[in-house]
Figure 1 (cartoon, rainbow, N blue to C red):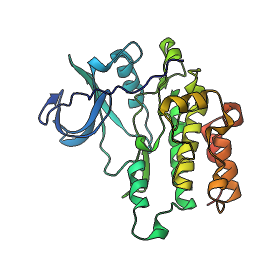
Figure 2 (tube, helix red, strand yellow; figure 1 turned 60 degrees about the vertical axis):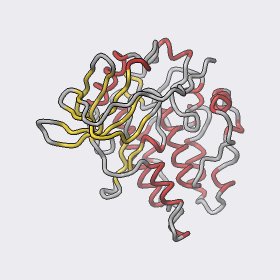
Figure 3 (cartoon, helix red, strand yellow; figure 1 turned 90 degrees about the horizontal axis):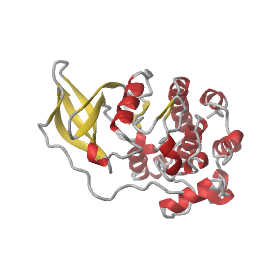
Figure 4 (cartoon, rainbow, N blue to C red; figure 1 turned 180 degrees about the vertical axis):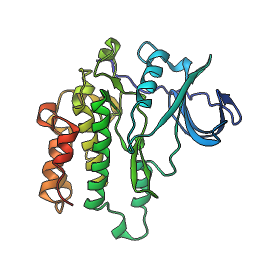
Amino acid sequence: MNERMPMTAPTRLLESGDRLGNYTILKVIGKGSMGAVYTAWQEGLSRQVALKVLMKDRFDQLVTAERFLLEAETAANLSHPNIVTVFGQGERTDCIWFAMQFIEGPSLSEWLRRRGRHPIPSRRRIQISEIRDLARQLLEALDHAHQQGVIHRDIKPENILWAGNTGRAIVTDFGLSSVNYVTHEAEKHFILGSPLYVSPEQARGDALDGRADLFSLGCVLTELALGFLPVRVERPEKIFRTRASEDPAMFTGTPRDHQPDLPEEWDKYLRRALSPNKNARWPDARTMLSALPPA
């Protein structure tokens, strides 16, 4: 298996004041190996948006400009209060981009870090009622996307925004989504997704359905419940191999092994979500939503 690892060379950033269509770049708010996310001002509608920009020199046989724009168009057709709204997309000689709703609030990963540093120890731990509410919102979002034939493929805390002032969790970044459950031929030789949250079938490069997202969400919920994800700290390629082989030791114990006071119903729920065999998980997001234990 040829495991796709992030490129190490820094991506080129656009300058404040650069224009893409009717959007003017304000500042960078995040960056990765293929591009960056900026705040931008949309002329005409006079609103601030988030602009995701990918540089064409970072594209290859797998992630092509045409595929990215197709997936951006598909994401734009998703309409749900827990999925970020995509406003438009475009292309120029050096990059492609799409504009989306700008969310005031941190990612779930940053929110977790802030909670972990709370000066009052009792406030550092995430309550079951909070986990249940987040799970409900995220499962409703995934159910909507899956019903439209879109798998997210990279569910992780960094791709969940927490609009705390509205109490809303919002899934973003469908840039790795697979349209209509069809796996691109080249994907058999590459891995997309984040090692800590990737499902076993995705690590193998198998054809995917929505159950891959349910596994990744199970990882996120387990991290919320425990304050960490119980995996050994290893190189990403080792994690991929462990997941791909469905190694029973892919996690260092059950949720209750690490937190004995976790309600038994929640331990069973999380263990089912983390089942290596996709057939042992729930068949779809709607069923997993219906099975949510009480707070």
